[in-house]
Image 1 (cartoon, helix red, strand yellow):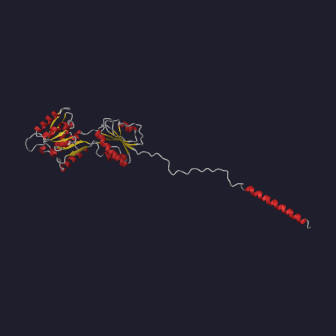
Image 2 (cartoon, rainbow, N blue to C red; image 1 turned 45 degrees about the vertical axis):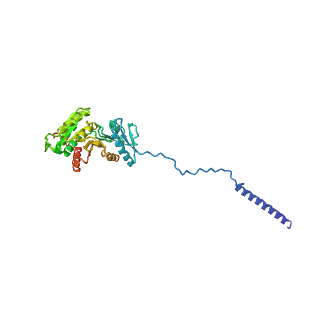
Amino acid sequence: MSSRLPKQRSLNFRIFLITITLLLSACQSSYPASVTSTSTVTLSSPPSLTPSPTSTPLPPLIILLASEGADPAWVETLQGQMDELAQAEGLRFQTKNNLEVSEPESQVRLVLVLPPDPGVAELASTISQTIFLAIGIPDVITTRNLSVIGAEGAHADWQGFLAGFLAALVTQDWRVGVMGTTDDQTFRQAFINGVRYFCGKCRPVHPPYHEYPRFVELPPGSTSENWGTALDLLLQKSVQTVYLTPGVSLEELSPYLVSREINFISNTVPPENLHTQWIASVFPDPFQNIPELVLELLHGKESFDLPMQLALETNPNQVSPGRQRLAEAVLTELQAGHIDTLGPP
């Protein structure tokens, strides 16, 4: 029995060693042999904090379409008005000599068009989403996107009538006259009617007892000497105030006006050397209320057809505030179509 015990212990020890060996092998198969990894990890770049640039659409355009031959004074006036309006409305403004029908409609919001006519009716029909405003272009007809100012012209009868009314209003005994060319007969007849609208038969209270108003006419292109002689004919009839129609050159006549010391009404504001004798100027003004009208069109107002407006500039040393109000009241009635300017006086 004592000999079998050492053998049993030896066997148990071998079994223990085999068990330990198997356990160590199992552990080695569960864990990597090295802590060093051979795999590669690629990191993406961090996102940029600066956003990528994007294209910002430009504001819509207001265009002044002034073809070759357009009145420079009209162009200058509208440029000043529209540049200021466009800035206030967050729009862009440009002046162009022509407008292609291929202009992107989304970029052109409104086009103002001056004479000579570049074919505004066709442009408005083709570029149908753009608003058009024709100023002083004859015979243009209003459409859905085409508004018109002054298609009937400058109303010579309104100008002459208002000049006649004002001349009689400020002149003692209504001793007034009119000078013009043979092409200015509408101005002359309307002037006579304007004088008589105020003073009836216009009979002087004191001598000399001439019939008023007086008038003289010369052919277009007459010399300054011819006009000086014509002015003398009026002075011989004691005329104190003369209306100079657009056919008379104020520049050529100015030396005679100064030397004869006669008061006058003209169709333009005269130079400083004539201001003492200047009573007033009556002339077409298509730009009254243009900024307001353009704003209304931009904000959805329907198209319109308005007459050419008149401007009245007066000399405060010659025209009192009361007479100014009377003249302005007649101007309002004229532009509303309430006065027959060329009918029998």
